Amino acid sequence: MSSNVSGATGLSGRYATALFELADEEKQLDQVAENLSTIGAMLDESDDLNRLIRSPVISKDDQLKAMQALLEQAGIGDLTRNFIGVVIKNRRLFSLPGMIKGYLALLAQRRGEATAEVVSAKPLSDAQQQAITDSLKQAVGTKVTIDAKVDETLLGGLVVKVGSRMVDTSLKTKLAGLRLAMKGVG
Image 1: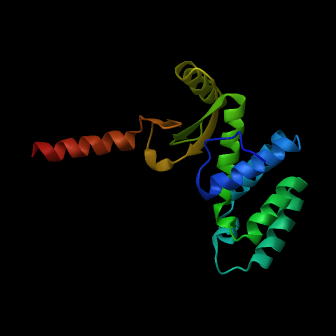
Image 2: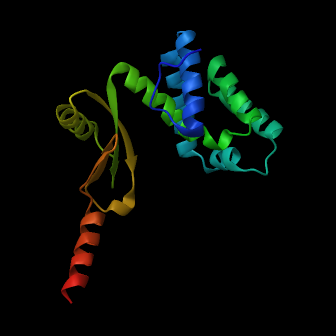
Image 3: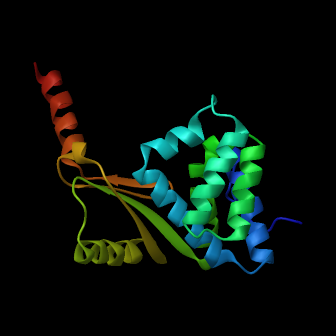
């Protein structure tokens, strides 16, 4: 299997690339992406699941049993379940969130899309997300998918990351800058 896929680096990137190539070969790119998004959402919602994937104390057999039961109940496809089984057997489950991000980034790259991470103080409405998507599409020049996150410590405003570019208009950052400027005055 020669890789035509670039951009994924490190441990997570290598696993993401392998899964991407396998899913491409099996013509299951979208199904695997949907499965990984479901798993990512499950990780975002469950501290217990995060402890399960990160704990070096839990044996790989116990991790495998727990994850396979959870994935089957969630309706995750065979290819994704088998991939996660390999990840567990290799004791790399702690890197699963990075593998998910890597796979989704590879898929977006294949489609000519950019993914923007948008962090806000409160959940964005559909209209706000659409306005941000439209603005980013104009700025970037390609289709943009938004990965919206909430960080209540921002107080207000947004932090937008597209690739290596970041725009931080959060009140938290503006207040920190003001605080720094005030220290320089006195």
